[in-house]
Image (cartoon, rainbow, N blue to C red; front, side, top):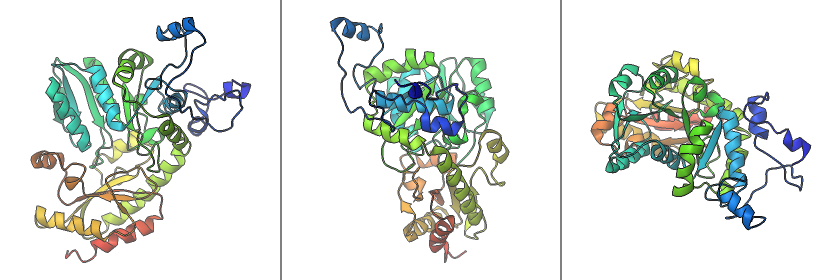
Length: 408
């Protein structure tokens, strides 16, 4: 490693966030490359039989097999850990495999989980799968710490929340829930997908574990799938690493390289996403066809003050509810807006530089029972927009095409 590479910033250094996003985790090889290399290899050779035995026994450092360790993947892990302020990180093949890995690492048959209502629909389905193995989940309102406390049982092994939530953009009080979890000796797990460490650092607010769908804003251009789990060095080494090693939710080296490069522009992208989303949210609030706009940086948001206290900006994602006489009318109105879009991409994915739109009740949350959707506040007239990096005036004009003539 060269002298300059030895000075690459990492977790705990004095360098600023943007410097860590560009430099952390990068150690040059003997070739002196200026950009990060990709190690596209399934396995790694050893100097001797004794060296191989020492590495397998954990007595010598070094990579063995890319299912559970690769230099390019490690670059991404170290860079993201530096941004989140975490002691360590393990990357996974997707955001869902990240959540799955946390569940496997912390629970066993007979255990219990408390989770916020209104989380991503697939997260709910994952928890339902774990019910097959005797792990029960109780859902509580995100913004009601008393409900969280009341739901905790002697066999509760973790508290899980998204903040802001998907798609309602509700904000959870991480500090309050962290204090509750600490008293009970239960890990608090926060999905930081919407904000990323550029806008929110849950570990600084008291959370124990952070999960990411790196597919979203960490990549930022809709190119690859990936996930990550961050926490203490002890948790990662003793609880999480065996899951990654033996279950194999492996992030590919190529995807890790793309994600590491995505982190380099994370700060500037999230700032512009937030600026654009606020402009679109304010425009939607003035539309007569819109009953309600959900975006944390709007003064009308019920947790606006809390969002200001624990986030640096509002993020890219907003949701809005259309007016209508009943569910059928609201759904028809929502679908007309979607179908009229010519600029916004009709896709359930988010985190892209391109703005996207979806109808959660019939896409991302369609597998939830209708009663559960209503209880979570996900109505038939709700649309979710992930505002990209286009001119926000063009995004508004595209939405106006479908809003016009709704008969309000």
